[in-house]
Image 1 (cartoon, rainbow, N blue to C red):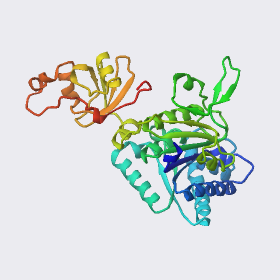
Image 2 (cartoon, one colour):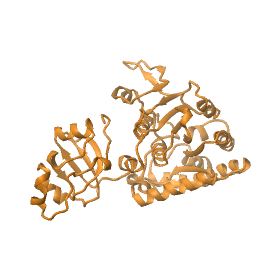
Image 3 (cartoon, rainbow, N blue to C red):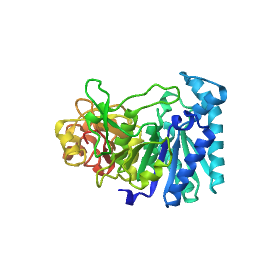
Image 4 (cartoon, one colour):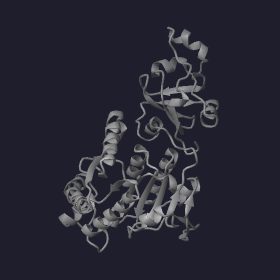
Amino acid sequence: MLKGVRRVVVKVGTQLLMGGKTGSEERVAELVAALAGLRRRGLEVILVTSGAIGAGMRILGTAKRPSHIPGLQAHAAVGQCRLMSLYETACAKLGFHAGQLLLTAADVRDRDRYLNVMHCLHEMLQTGILPVINENDSVSVDEIQFGNNDTLAALVGSMCNADLVILLTTIDGMHERLPEAAGFGRRLSVVPAVTPRLRQMAMGTDGNALSVGGMITKVHAAEMLMKSGAAMWIACGRDFAVLNDILKGADVGSLFVAADGARLNAQKRFLAFFSKPAGDVVVDAGAEKALVAQGRSLLPSGITAVLGSFKRGATVRVVNASGLELAKGVTNYDSAELALIRGRNTHEIPGLLGGEHHYEEVIHRDHLVLTSAEG
């Protein structure tokens, strides 16, 4: 797997930059030196960094992470300036520059803004700039938040078609969770699939003063990346030299490996992870089997209900009778038309809708991507 790696996203958490006894300036310099080592290997490197709020806490003398959004926004606004100053200083000493991208979820849900971000990233990589990406915490509110930088790193990895995403944290990987609260067992070295049992073993937030998230957010990130066709590696980043160990294939941390042939094209990556559905199409068991098990297109005969109001060309969710999301896709019909043709055979469409130009498929398989855990 490592022989094919050309583009790498590295995510570093606040604890690794701000939580230790070593000064943040020294820690950032150590990180940038390690990233420079990856660049010398010929790799394209993108950094997703936490730390703006933590840096703001240090500057403002705040002991505990604020719990209300305005407080988080203010600390991020102060800390982001400091954080990027440290990154640019460290990069410049090694002969290259850092470029800042601050994102909200709204920036990647809209197709045009998504493409603008992607083009900016590609241009920075082409010109040798180190992209440094963080959530735009100074303007983020609930409806436009990613929630944590594990998710952001996975989305960036999917957006830029990365081969590998490395999540650096304070633990040495994912461990088996022993039954009856007996603690944790062996480290999981290689994870070929995310199973229900694996999700159950994943921990939530550890509740420390600086960070948000936990192992469960990393497992969710792994699912997203593995479906995109990328690998994800969780490793302890207390010593940033671990990045060199990873690229040598050392048995450190936990490697989540995508199945062979799993890589999605650009359109399907956007559909699966970035698009905001305008409504739902409910399907019967036969259509569910045709979509999930047989890779078929969605026909009107398998539709039992249409939820929401949307136009032709909108992104919709395909759900089963239990409400489980099976897929997302681009519909060839608007919601009013679907209400008329649902449950009917394809040859009946002209008589129901009138006119001559109609599609046989409600959603063609080329414009549909499976999103359920089972899929």
